Amino acid sequence: MKAIETMRRICLEDISWTEPASNVRYKAALFGNRKVRLVEFATGFAEAEWCCAGHIGYVLSGRLEVEFSDSTEVFEAGDIVAIGKDDKHRARVVEGPVRLFLVGEA
Image (cartoon, rainbow, N blue to C red; front, top):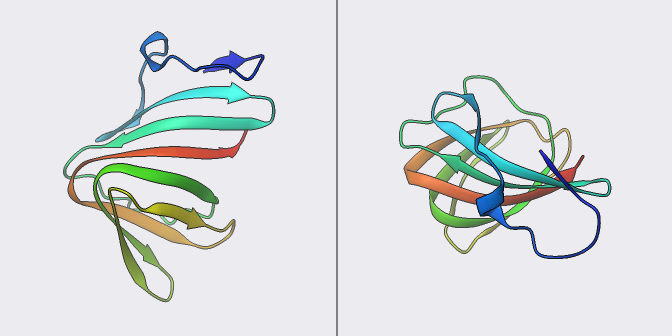
């Protein structure tokens, strides 16, 4: 993960992809206590486990279905995603690939 010291342009071409699991990869940079990520979910991506981390971001492309404990929502290009910390959820790609720009705590 690349650390950014000052508020300037982050060049994604200079950051390598990290592939933590099948059908998902991301590029990340640290800016102070914030982590910014470009995340890409390939067609076929579906989380088996529930996530309890908060997420704030913007959907750049594709359609992502997010299942919550009490409902399901679909996010698509142009939508802002705002999931609170401890709001249990899991996602799957409806139409992909899905690209998201996410900002969170480092």
